[in-house]
Length: 319
Image 1: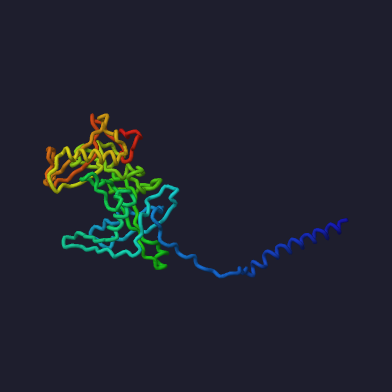
Image 2: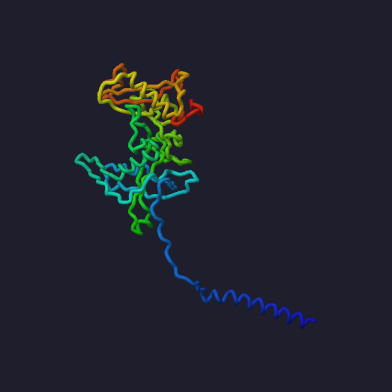
């Protein structure tokens, strides 16, 4: 029986070697796959509402005395279902070249019509415009006061190599309390119509630390503060303070979405005025040429810690 067993072992070995050869030989010869290799085309420009997925330098336009530093950051799209660093509000198909000039004193002046277009698109995206698409002038005296930074973003290297030259206007949020001028905030949701939805309110709002807004050293809503500015304006003629306070009350109700916000007296509507000399003005008749601010101030030594934009019936964010 021994020789028979040996022959079976040899036969099995031959079968195994045959299988190995079937695998190894074709690979050694190199495989051929039918078809033609084609490069994947570069994606086209983004659409309004798409999200910025990676950080960029929010101080990109702070060129100092070096005009060559005025370079738009590169767009890197991300998933809007995840926390992101900004949103595309429009695309400029044919951007113009910015004019950057160094004057005799070493200062830099910049004329960039692309950023003008981005500013207008950002206002529309946030819901700060009226029904005609123009900046809303409310109740006769007020423009919305929001902190809404914006940036123009270039195509990627691959897209530029494919001949794409558009610019994507994007808005984003920064922490205004940072000493370096503001760091990017990663947020969830959309800033579309944020004036009505309240998304990002703590970073969009203007919240002076001091009760005298002319003396404010910070406007960061996440920090404890005495009040919040909702509108600003100027005067071409003298106006009674009572008239301005009445219109400011309507603005407060619209921005906060809460008509009862000041009824219990813990918050009061406040119109603060800076005269043409840069001083706080307290008189009953506001002279023309003055700068106006409309908002609310907490009473009784209370402080807020958070914005009241579109707060509605949610709890007041007392510090």
